[in-house]
Length: 194
Image 1 (cartoon, rainbow, N blue to C red):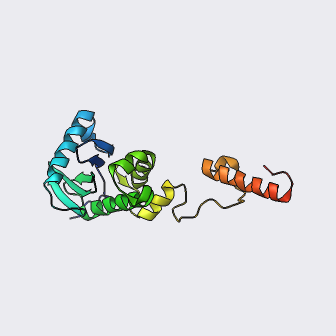
Image 2 (spheres, rainbow, N blue to C red):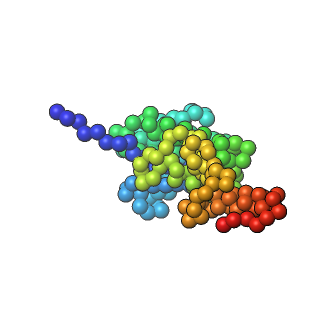
Image 3 (cartoon, rainbow, N blue to C red):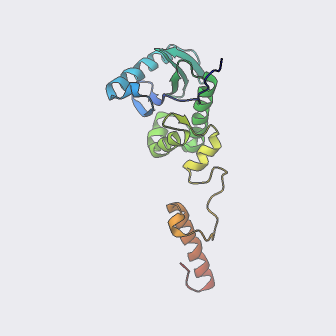
């Protein structure tokens, strides 16, 4: 008898404050299509998490046919949920990667409501680099941080003076290239090349 192997999948990634207000969330399951169903789910998750004694560590709970791993912060809760038969160790790794990425990209390393709302663009980018359509893309927090900060997964930024065509460059790479060309032109007293 052959067992069917499926790739790990995430149903949702949710970040809410201690009052149940959503900071950011991504749902990848058809079960939570309406805002009302999402808010009810988030409220129920928070109520269950508030009864936990996990502190700042990751914890696991079974909840209405789902498995949820969560981690509390100063004034936030982060949840990663999957189907009931999903591997909780993988979900914890996803949660830890996201938490560690936020600790690296948020001001002062503070994973709190104020910092997350202040840098909401980075918070959402990190979510999108972690999971897409329920498929886990990355669990290495440093790779997520590098991608969010416009570097490659290996941490190498755009090469100075590289001859990559403008159409193939990201806006940041194009500006860095322009800056380097202008520096060279001013230092040499000549014009810069296109």
